[in-house]
Amino acid sequence: MTQKITKLEVTNFIGITEATIEPKKMTVIRGENGKGKTSFIQAILAGFKGCGADKIKVGSDSSTIFLKTEEIELRRRITAKGSSITVKKDGMIMTKPQAYLDGLIGDFSFEPVKFFTMKPEEQTEHLLKAIPVKATLEQLKTWTRGLLTALEAYLPLHGLEAIAKAEETLYAARAADNSRVKTLESAMSEIESKIPASAKEFKPEELQTVMDQISKSKELRQERARLLAKKDELTGEEGLTSEEIESMEAKIDSKKKSLARMEEEHANIKTVDLGSMEKARAELVEKLRIIEEDISRASSSNQKKADAATHISYLTKEIEETGKYLGKAQSKMEDLKEQQKNLDLAATAINPLELAPLEAKLSQFREAQSYQRDLGRLEDMRAELKTVRESAEAKDKAVKTLQTAAPAEILTAAKMPVEGLAYSNGQFTLRGVPIQNLSTSEKAWLAVAVTRYLNKDYPIKAICLDGFESLDSKTQKAFMEEAAKDDFQYFITCVGDNELSVKTE
Image 1 (cartoon, rainbow, N blue to C red):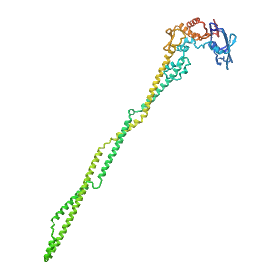
Image 2: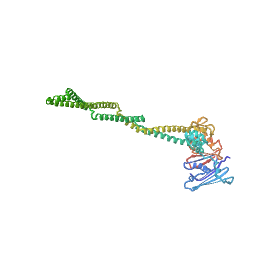
Image 3: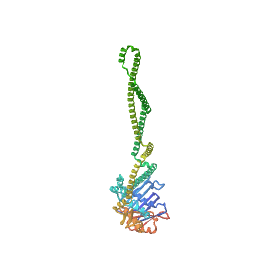
C-alpha cells in the first residue's frame, strides 16, 4: 500500500541544526550553498536505512531523525557508538523495525537531474546500472571464451557488474600478456643483435664432419711420416748401399781375374811320371846324380801345380760363396728398392686435407656453436611469443565481447524501465532515437520515468530532484510538468540567495 511522508523532524544532522517540514506533493528546499538543502534528502534516506556517526553535525554528540507516514512513525537516534530505531505502526511498537523499514523506500541512487546533465556515455552507464539483470554461468563462460575460472563468484552481482568485473580481470590479464609480448620482443631483439648470421645457419653435423676430417688428416699425416721413417730405416741397413754393392762387385771381379790367371798357369804346368823316372833311376843308376836334380825340379813343379790346384779350388769356392752372397745382397737390395718404391708410392698416395683451412673452419663452427644456446632461447621465446600473442588476442576478443555484445545480450532479455527504451551497439535509444538526441521534454520525461520505475515497488514513493538550479528554466518547466503526472512525492533542492527555506504544495 502506498504511503506518503507527512512529517520530517531533524536535529543535528549534517548541515541541519533543527528543522521540521511537512512534505506534500512538491517540497522545494531553497537556500545558499552549505546551508543543509541536501541534508534533508539524506535525512529521509538515513531515517529509513540508517547511517554512520559521520552524519552527526559537527560539535554535537548525537543526531535525531523523526519521520511520519500515513501508517508509521519512526524515530532514529544516531551516536558515535551506533544508532537505535523505534517504529510504531497503528500505535504499536514493532519488534523488528529495520526489517520492515528496508522494504519501504528506494535508495535515491538514480538522480534525474544528474542524469539529465550527464554526458551521453555517463547517461548510458547510469541507465545500465538502473536495470536489474543477472548473468548466468553459461553466459559468462561464453563471453569470456573460457579464459576465466571461478566465475561462480560473479553470479550474485548485478549482471552488468559481473560483466564489468570479468572485463576488468581479462583487461588486466591482456595487459599482462601485452607487456610480456613487449618484454619478449625486446629480449629477442637484443639476443638477435649479438648473434652472427653464420651462427643462425650452423648445423651440428657440419661441425662433426670438420672434426672427423681434421682427425683423419692427422692420422694420414702420422701414417705418411711412419712410412717415410721406415724407408729411411731400410736405406740405412748394412751392405745395402750402392757404393758397397759396387765395391763388392769389384772384389768379385778381381778374384775372377786372379782365378783365370791361376787356371792358365795350372794348365801350363807339365806333370812328370815319377814311377818311370824312379825306374829309370833304378835302371840308370849311373845317371842318378844327373837326374836327381831333374827329380828335385819335377817334385817342386808337381808341388807347385798341386798348390796351384788347391789355390784354384779355394778361389773357386770363395768365388762361389761370394757370388751367392752377392746374389743374396743383390736380391735383398732389389727387395729393399721395391719396398722403398712401395713406401714412396704409399706416402705419395696419402693426400691429407690441409689442416689450416680445416682448423679455421672448425674455429668458425665452434664460435657458431657457442651461440646455439642463445638460438635455443630464441626458439623458446618465439614459441612463447606465439602463445602469449594468441592468448592476448583471445583476451582482446573476450574484452571486446564483454564491452559491447555481452551488455547488449543481457539487456535484450531484461525488462526496460520505460517502454520504447532499447540498448544496442553500446548506447541507449528511446523509440529509435539516441538519448543524446532527445528533446528537452523527452529527456526530462525519460529521467523521471526511469526514477519512477526504480521506485515503483516501494510503498513510499519519493523522488529527489537535487541541484534543480543547474537546469535552465525550460528544462525545469519540463521536469515540473512531468512530475505533476504521477502520485510520487518530490523533494526539490535549489540554490538561493537567502537563508534556508522550505515550500510545500
